[in-house]
Image 1 (cartoon, rainbow, N blue to C red):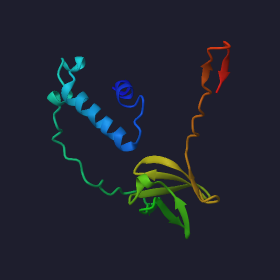
Image 2: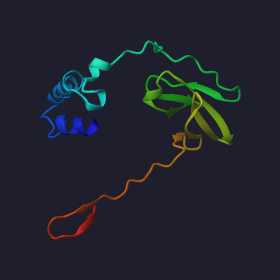
Image 3: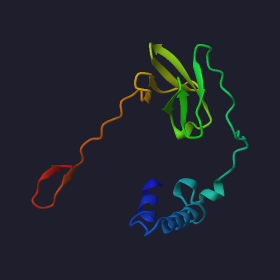
Amino acid sequence: MHLTLKKEATIPPEKDLTAQQERFDRFRKEYNHERPHEALDMKTPSEVYQASERKMPKKMRAYDYPLHVKVRRVSRNGGIRWKHLWVNVSQTLMEEYIGFEEIEDGVHNVYFYDILIGRFFEEINRIRDIIDRVPTRPTIVKQSYPCTWNKV
């Protein structure tokens, strides 16, 4: 599906965002309502789709962090206060509660519910990822003339 979307709706890109969105909308309508799919017995996705009966909550229920965990509410601008200093967390967690579990003096694991989202270091007043970012590989491009391989 993603390759089809890329071929039909992004190459070449439209001249502005409005035109690009209109192109995406046309693609979605054709893909879901007009184009039969072999994997669906030559039916369209709209012919076989059934809405779930399960209701999604508007807001997740409150989570009870363990008593030794310090809890902070992430503000609407994506951060918290820690000892009167501002700490950036994430816009994604706005108005949610996160927990800080001290693992060393001044070092805390940071949790959203029971999911470890980072490690907070009081010394630098920052939350860092637990896992180092995966480095990107150099892309090797074959040039047509002269016939050489170059790292980009």
